[in-house]
Length: 169
Image (cartoon, rainbow, N blue to C red):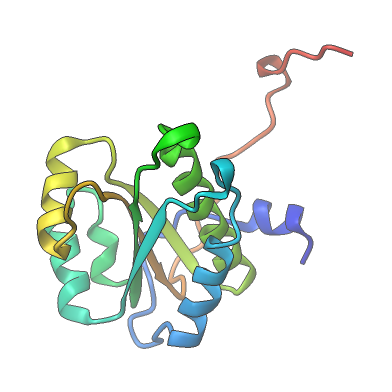
């Protein structure tokens, strides 16, 4: 599959097959992709929490108001931002977003489904996720990524809109 085909195939999945686990090897492959994302001044301002424990996935679904899909997901990755200092200060949202997108695309290429559930910059969600996972300042819970084998096939909602492009040629 080409990168364009992978981008076009990626969907936000909210229902997963509960009887097919995501393996540690698959999680490692997703995390490898994440850690190859670009970051400001190569600071790599991220850490990750990989979860397959059913009780914790259910707790995420109960805690995060938009992560109900974790009830059927067989894994999740919490992206934790580690804000940079110096020249790269303030760029962690872009850097963690790039790492997150790498996970989504790698998962799509592997036949896995994902759903990116935002945490940052919502203060209440950040506090709840920080408490749930013992994340201490200055680290910030950035997002939850639900992962599993899709049990649905939603239609694409993305499309090209030339009216949103200004060409300077």
